[in-house]
Each structure stands twice: as C-alpha cells, then as structure tokens.
Length: 214
Length: 246
View 1 (spheres, chains in turn cyan, purple):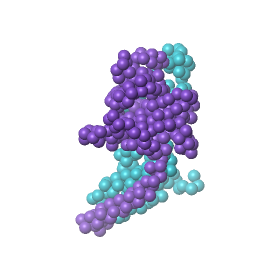
View 2: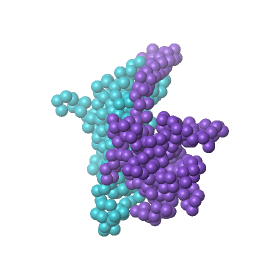
View 3: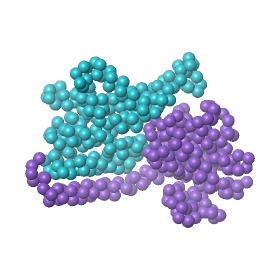
View 4: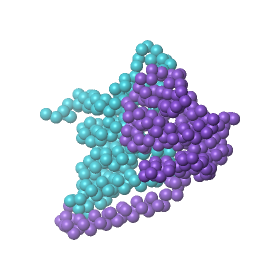
C-alpha cells in the first residue's frame, strides 16, 4: 500500500480479522441482533456506520486537546448525534427515498457501541488521519460481520437474498421447496443472530489460537 | 490532557459553547432544509394515495411509486374529489391530503370532532375510495392508505411504518403482504368486521377473500396485530359514509 505506512495499514486490516469490533471487541452486538434479518438492512447499516464512524473519529480527534475529560462521553455523544441528525436532514431534503430506508437505523447508529467505543479508545488519543483510518477499518470489520450474519439469516430464514427468491418459491413449491425444504423461521428471530455470531467467533478462534483467552 | 481543560470553569464554558454551536448548527440545517423536506412529504402522500388505487410503477414483485416528476399530474388526473368528513358534515377540500391524521386522532381524544379525509379516485371506469389511517406497531407508528370500492371491499393498500424491525415488522411494506389485502371484504353479513392479520389463516395463497383474514409475517406478531387493530378502529369510522353510498 503506497499511500499508507505499514503502521497505518494495520489500522484498516486489523479490525477486519484479529481485532474485529464484533467478534473480538464485542462492540455493536445490539445492532447485529436488531437488523440482520435481511441482507439489505445489514448493508445499509454497514454503510451508515462507515460514514458516521469515519467522520466522527476525525471530529473527535480534532477536538481531543480541548475536550474536558469530565464530560468527554457527553461531548462524544453530542458529536455523533449531531452528525447523524445533519446527515438525516440532508438525506430527507435531497434523497428522500434513501432517508426512509435509513430511518430506523438513525437511532441505532447514535446508540451503537462501536462509535462511542472507537471515539473513546482511539480518536481521543490519536491524530485525525490515523483516527479516520481506525474508523474506516472498524466500520469495515463491523460491516463484514453484519453482512455475513444478514446473508445467512435471510437465506435460511426467508429463502431470499436482497429480496430475490434464490431457493425457489415456498408457496408454489418450486426449487428446493419441491424437495421438502422449509424456511427456518428461527433464523428471523434475534437470538439466532447471536448464534450465527457465535459460530463465526468459534471458526475465527479455531483458525487462530492466539485469540483464545486463558 | 492538560490541567487547563480539567477545571470546573473551563468545563462549564466548554459545555455552554458546545451546546450553542451544535444547537445553532442543527437549527440552521433544519430551518434551511425545511421547505424541501415538506415538499418531499407532500409528494410522498400523493404517491401513497395513488399507489393504493393501483396507479404505480410496480413490477412483478416490488412496490414502486409513480416517479416524483409525474406525481402531481397523475394525482390531478386520477383523484377526482378530496372529501373531509366531520360527523355528518361532508365537505370538499383540494388539500384534504395534507390533513395530519395523527393530530386529528389527538384532537378526537380531547373531545373534538375528528376530520376524516377520504379521496375519491377513478381509474378504468372504476371508483376508488382511499382512506389514510394510522395506528401503533411494535416500536412506533404504523400507517396506511387503503383503497376500497363502495361496498368496502379492499382494492389496494399501502402500508408504512416509522421504526418496525427490518426483515420482520418492517415487511408490512413489502408487496407480498400488502397485496394480500386486495379483495378482502371489510364487512361481514352487513356489519363492519375489519381484516385480521392471522397466524392461523391456513390460506398461504390467500384465495379465500371473504374470511376477513390475511397471513401474518413470521416474527412480526405485534406489528401484524397493530395493523389489524388500526384497520378495525380507523376504517370503522368511515362506515357511516359508505352506508350513504348505497
């Protein structure tokens, strides 16, 4: 990577695997449960967090030397809330359809642990460029898990991907359904998101023993 | 972190400054974008009304509105009358679509006579009566535009929500759910019955249109119950008007 030093590149690549915000840092679990019943929602949430975390980390990093430590959490919350509200208002004015798609995610973005977690753990102690990379890296790591969970939940729960019937028609009994296959309704319920995340964590730790805590 | 930023005085000044700056920024953004947001909401209402009566750009499986640039022309072409029902009084109002159903519900709770908007549309020689309704889902409001014929048989519906769970309750705005309502009779043996969103419908192809039931969405029981309750309580208010049509 010509643009990035080795140290900077790690900020992007590390959260994708060995320091993933969901599977290792255990941040952002709530939204992973709430919106991964369909793949499209997972992608929308991943992109939204990518934007907010990237910009938010830069803003907090720029302010890091003037924020009073006693109220730093409140300041972080105000920054992320203001950022999300401004984005929401701009979308409502110029991309109304997209804003409607995002509506339910706006509240979830503000309360997403990853945002506050990265502000607190990284942006408060690092410069704007590195904070931006950290935000992008963590949002990508978060998005990758979200999309993986959304993929399996929608495929096995509804037999569709992005709304398209990929396994056949369950009412007309075509495709896999002709052989007696049935959608697993449990996959649509939030606890199954935890189980899918758990399986991903299991696979991740079995491939890299260094991740297993004593 | 330097000591300067830890003093009480600095913290207080910082908090005040931050609130003022962020408040001003949000107020400026909201007020400067307000006209555009309001225009988008007006267009959306017209699109929703037209959608319910079958004026839309649907393909085989997705729900698509008429485009933004065409909606004003289509609305003027297909919506022949906009009525406001206030008790026994029925008036025409060309901006009845702007009536805020939520405010009217609140006013009715306070004892005021509620304004019920009803849009009369014509398409291919058929007359549609479209009612906007609003109720509660699992997390927040749900609302709908239901098109009926003069016998209160549903001809089309558009459902929407504020914050139902994606992939579950949010699926009330999917075509497979909305289309199930088409043909359902809101009346049963001369009295208003509504339509139940039922887990025990046992009619996956929704062929029995006289059973006042449609199939529920898996994992969205409370949203479905909210939709059924909204239809029952809100569309029931229009029954006296529909009786005058016979």
